[in-house]
Length: 590
Image (tube, rainbow, N blue to C red; front, side):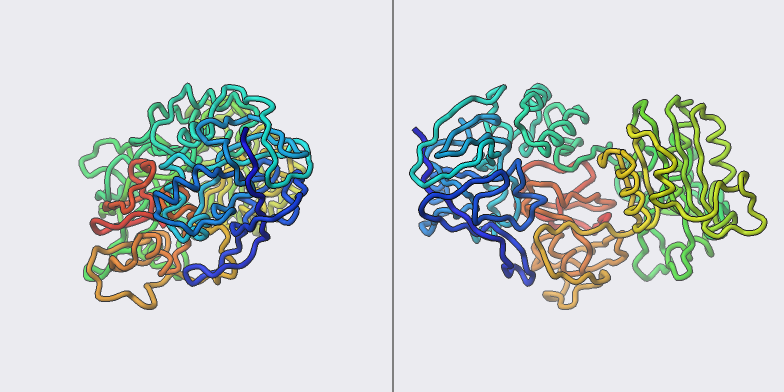
């Protein structure tokens, strides 16, 4: 008979960590006497990051005495106390390789159901003073698991644990944890996991992403879409190659397009509708090049690429292209990349943009028109006036080829010469009220691009209008927003070279393309993630040990090595920056 050995609780608190402050509830202390277990928590317990921990599906974290014994031996430690692994219930029995998702248990006066393995993140490493801990839990197949509370009630250390039911499919915690995190994602096992109703929604979404990507035996070029949430083919060529400018065309008063072709005249590999091209601009032969990304705006599958650029008044890259690049010149470009792409299907499509944000959705409109799609298509665009309205005639012609086409053009400050009903639909801005009035189909997939504030407002308006949040896709120009779970009080700063380099540079150059800086590598940084943090480059991470793939970043040119090795390889052409170092000069899409 399994036994509840200890009940541990703790409220979240600020904890100093690597010069920052983390708000976390991973520190738990055992309590005596009965404790009430409620739907969302045990009395006296809380979580600092409710996006990754806690909630109805993750109300109680369970870890086993047998794993305590394993880690004492593995880590050479004898200082463990109950709650050491951030768990609420320390149990004797219920091993991860026997407990199944959907199993139900009675403990004291409460009834529980197993919903998912533990979420791996860096905070268990903080608590254990072992930075590798998140990866070790997965690699050793000892993650622990979460309970959902089916019946609230009191529990007490020493209570017997009575099994009430076995989950359908009898899939163990260790099996499903390995299915998501470790190499090899057999289709039949993924389908089996999706037949378990008790599996938490987050893990169901990960399994569906694996299934949608049709990952067979994992690894290789496919990466792990169950963790990254998107799968894209590997880049068509490594690094940068010279392409010839065959045409320069004005699209509006501030936006121009460059058409690029292979030097030998052969067709270029097709980009996907919505992807972007990264170009290397050499303004000064003796200085570092500029790295910039521009969306593909032309017809996908054409023999040549078309990128469209907004000339910013003080933009170094756009200014150089506008003033100096002419037909016949060569421009270095990396292969098309990006996961903001038009999904196949027959559901309605909403293409929503402002200003230069029209560029990636323009490529999508080309793809829909070329396919003679029977899908209902909504083209919604906001510009200042007709002079600042890119692709006006081109988009009208494409919409005219679609049977189910709807257009709405908003000019915020139309000129006297702009014609309502011909050039634009209505004066003013696209806002929540206007989106609601359009009565967009709730089953639509929406693709939104423009300034960040515009995208945030439009995403909120679309979901308020009935679209599912996971059907609203956005594309960000420039640096991506940070994902640093639990970190509080951090001040956003513009990316810059390290304020205090650790010594004379001894390694290759590392360029952060979106942030516009290049710095020399030094082994003292440890990982590319830590170098990025030293430069205040916005970063995304969670485990910091090569497990969760939150930090997965496209490598535009160059190569990396890993120390430690990641649990599962990233997609071809990408790197996990939390555990990698540059082998050569490197350009990251960061």
